[in-house]
Length: 229
Image 1: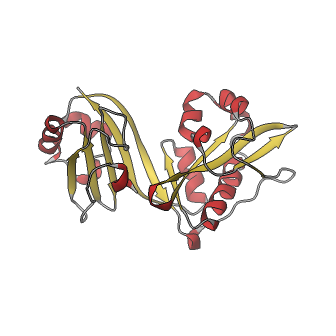
Image 2: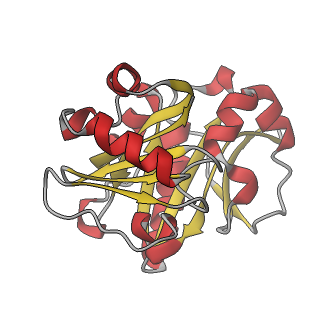
Image 3: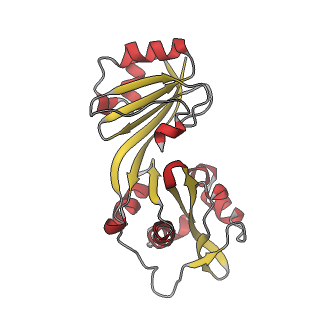
């Protein structure tokens, strides 16, 4: 999946390998940025130009592979402006899934994608959390919990390359800590597995990582995007 998103031929190789490629059209990061993905102890890096690729190769030559997605470590060897991440990448095999039920008195509803207005939930949660969840672009049904007719939690997934299902979950601040993210996320994961897809959970905040682990996800890598100065 990540190799395809790099938009040029590249592979992760063996543990410890770092492959830097020139890919102005990389889908791993914003255009003009460098994208770094670490999986299984190996890394691929997409650079926006030959010059940037050469700078990156020279800079990371002495950097341990497991520090490539650490903004502080990368910032010490490269002039970095803005950065996105790091985000932990977690995946789930069918046999490792641990389903979660909603709290007593609540239920998770399934609705066709686009048929539920998630705008009020996204505004309540705030732009940063809404962007992180990415529910506006989901290709799956929406899995929601309502209280008095109001959507207080929602989950779904986007179809990604390589038959991956990128899961997103969002809960209203007043309803966090009550298991709603686990319940809605569980429904989205169950649906993805039933379609023969590989669920992916990309998380930047500890609370989101805890939900993924509770559902049986294994953290296998990380991602960082940086804008070089």
